[in-house]
Image (cartoon, rainbow, N blue to C red; front, side, top):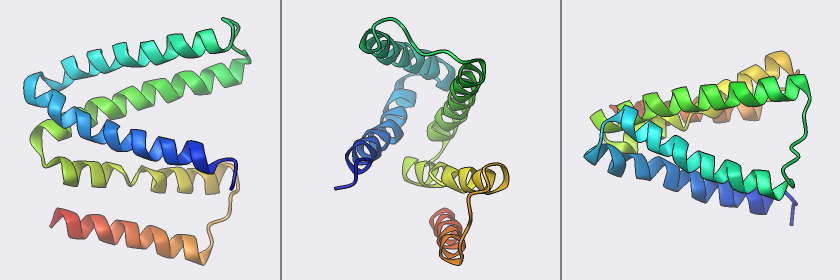
Amino acid sequence: MENWLIPASAALIIYGLWGFFPKLAVTYINPASALIYEVAGAMLVGLVSLCWVGFQPESHPKGILFAVLTGVTGMLGTLFFFAAASRGKISVVVSMTALYPLITIILAAIFLREPITAKHALGMLCAVAAIVLLTW
């Protein structure tokens, strides 16, 4: 078995829960409040991770910059996700926002020179077609 398959499968399940819980949260509280409590939950995971690395996280200026940018963009995306979840059907909202890998693929092709094959392009087109069908 590939060494990435188990953690990727765990991420898939956890992200599935991550996509479901916000709809429940914004049923009771507004999106901004939900984000505040999500950050509190994220801080708990951060504290566990800090313990895991023996309170000595690695540091490199570029690594820190990109990690902070990951946090900022992740939380901004989450705020907009919560806003959409409070207004729309979660099945459609989560499906549309789950197309974020398309942005990642395009950025990886441009900046990391990762190739986009014809099969990749066809998959991307199918993903876009799927969201069009889901939102109609």
